[in-house]
Length: 210
Image (cartoon, rainbow, N blue to C red; front, side, top):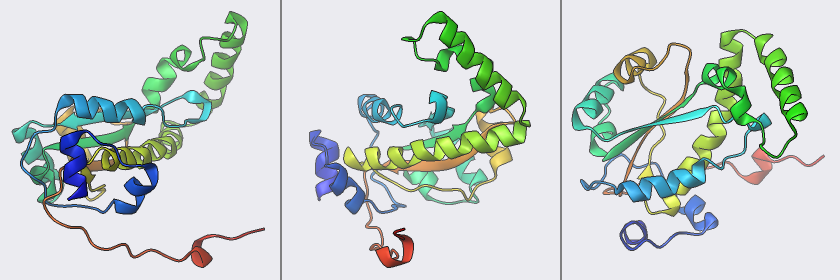
């Protein structure tokens, strides 16, 4: 099986093959994922494009058995949460970004330009409510989510993005601030079952030329 081979031999799929072969998987091989593989995947994910380079995405990777059981309960008993050797919670935390704006400014800029960037960003985001800032950051986290799913597949790990869970319970389980926004809960590992064949709209349905 190609996906098993890539996960065990270190071979990497092309971008095209990773996208074409990706299916949502809900049953996984009971085998831990080497931390080196996870780090390799997130080295790619952190390069996701982000408006103003704010990078509001944060990733909470859960491998602890008891924590996964708690997450499964929060996800209304969905078995893939505990079947997967690892689960990543993808969130956006714009309040952390705003509190540390100088970290987002490119180091190659002059000090004057850095100060201007921080002042402009502060002015813009302080004019929004916490909820509005959170929604803005969520659009950015969703970009990283797409790249995460592709990177996982490219390295031979299957996944399933989920939004069917009690967000308040997950915040409590992981000790997350109230203001964070969730892009997805993503169980991942080596597939033990096959996913459904793709059923997607044709280009005529989704693409318009003007």
